[in-house]
Length: 337
Image (cartoon, rainbow, N blue to C red; front, side, top):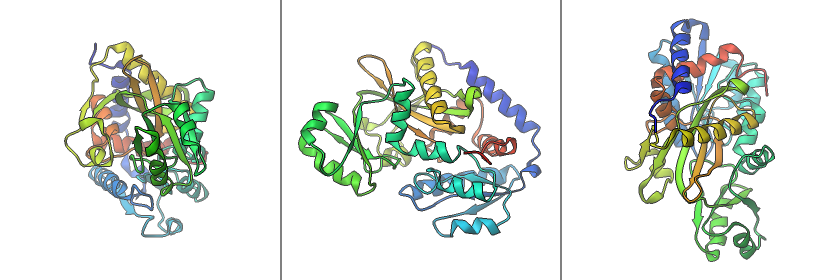
């Protein structure tokens, strides 16, 4: 077992070096997109206000812009030089706002149009992962005419039912009997036209933040999540102080490395860039990691996991925010799908 991570520590040192040479005036006027229209609006406001405060503390000319209260087309008249996207879920993490920013020729943080659109669709994401030989739980798309007995026969019990385009565990149900499936489907279908059911992997819940792009992308330290009663729901993700987070995880090095390699492969397969976070389950029987989903606009609240991993790599919250924004100076986040 080891508490060190040479790759992550190397990234942390490079971030410090790059920021030491950065003139924040070159960033110009920065719009921080926060709030928005998705079911994760409340979390986005928390993330965005944290990001805004961090940028202002670094001397950046940053301003909040809430596309949930104003038309996104008003961005054209704001004269921003670049955008920090702190939106979560649909209309912010799904390629739509990215497409608008491309048309406005505004550099922005995070993944481009295609990677964002693919990553928010849990079914499309899994199909790409499977085509690349990456492990993810068995699944199928549910409809109102699905044969519930057949679903259980295919996926086993317990299984997870959730909307295909939502995050933060919104509309998610852990189904323990075939009789619970119709209600679980209705809950998810109330939030999304596409609903996915997947085999429930019993084991440790993990997340692995990722930075960079393509072959130069790197994995930050893995975080082990221990929620009360193994229930990592919306409340325990963002508001409860009962959830425990272990970073380092306490696993042997080879386990951490296997998780990081899988997360990196999943990030590259989707064409993500700048930053992201892969959620993973570690099967308690086999020790095999399984990919759950990719987040292309990670949370930046007081309970968020990318800042936690970055801190373990030696990078504090405000420096992480400034570094992510600085990547728009390098061409990441503009004029590219």
